[in-house]
Length: 281
Image 1 (spheres, rainbow, N blue to C red):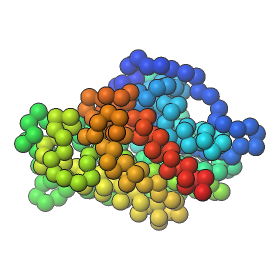
Image 2 (cartoon, rainbow, N blue to C red; image 1 turned 45 degrees about the vertical axis):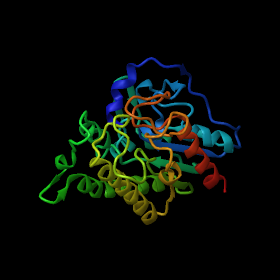
Image 3 (tube, rainbow, N blue to C red; image 1 turned 135 degrees about the vertical axis):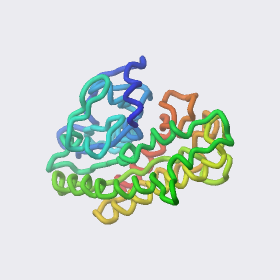
């Protein structure tokens, strides 16, 4: 997400961006999205531009290769809905408007966006605490008004605009909206401080906000004729509180090659499995 633009200078294994699987007859797949799509710090990181922190093992690359699609991956860490139609500056290069990856002959479009519009990375950074009894909910709820809920509601028409823009540019494409994988356990009120250093009272609150964001994405997908890829449900039991070999999302101090509070390669494979089933089916 937005804060990951600062990670562009982190050393990583870099390979040149290659074409998607298949020859001239291959169907085409365009991937749009933010860091949950791009895969920051998951080897191998691509050069186009390096500031997007885009992995050649993210879920679009894995799924498109398995299904034999040619892939145009425009995803970029820090992307917001505005970056679909405008260039996105990063600390190491500029990503063209993500809609540039769309053509009239595109067959499949995956899109995962909205987390940066509501400032989810900033929310997590605000809520990280050395004191598990010192919560952050009061930073966002004032006089009974929840600012995160307001931000989610304000993002809904932007999601509509993104989906309508995809349809206008790729009218024959099947469109899949990917939701956000579980960062926190799906049940319980304690979380796993200090592995995920959030106050006990904030765990159910922040979990509810992620579910609220995902619910909004599902509603806007349904209203615009797109399918939902439910990465959240598939990731239950693989949250950042689990062990290194089980989790799909990394905690504050990653034990796998990935950015904090972001999917690792196993998480990307989990999303790719869902897409292979839905797109291939």
